[in-house]
Amino acid sequence: MTSAPATPLQVNLATSGGVNDPKDTLWLASETKRRVYVQNGVDANAFQRVIGSTNAGGANQLTAGAGPNVTLDASGSTGINVLTAGSGTDTLIGGAGANTFNTGSNTEQLIGANGTTNLFVFMNNTTNVTVTPSNTGTNTLDFRRVSFPTTVDLTAKTIIAWYGAATVSTSGMYQGSLFQSMIRLT
Image (cartoon, rainbow, N blue to C red; front, side):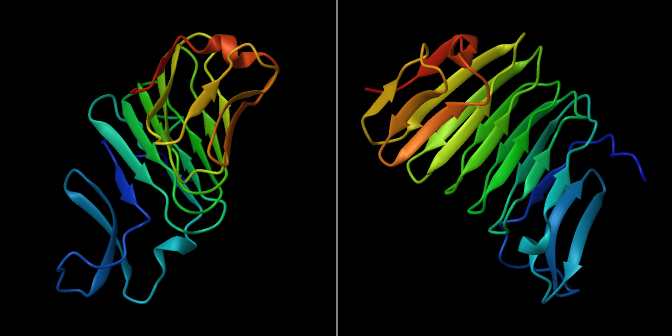
């Protein structure tokens, strides 16, 4: 098994076309001086796991596509990580650097890393989200992109927020107290 690259990684499994490449290929990822392509006709949604780089600087930007059960894993990274779920049922795993988790349009599992900053950003079209907050870092719930009235109860057993048809729950009992802040525009 090869180790993860040491430079920031950008992967977008949601891409739907090429990038004017003469090879008629579909762009999936790039790093400093490297790009990853798949041949035309190969569906980017067929990929089910993306592992971020071990970068110490820069930012991993990992985006899931429409494929089912996609895992975006930045657990080996010490840099900044931006993980964006797609339209499938996705699992997003943060790394040792600051993490931003953007929910997609289906059921998601967001796993924050201990000892770091985890920002959990919710969207209107998300159905159900399970959040595992960091025990030793800073955890923030961000509802700025939600236009529905939102109820948050950080003292609840497991379901800590709901809006529209969506629920936000924690992976363990009474983990709402691990969230240090919440962002909501009025």
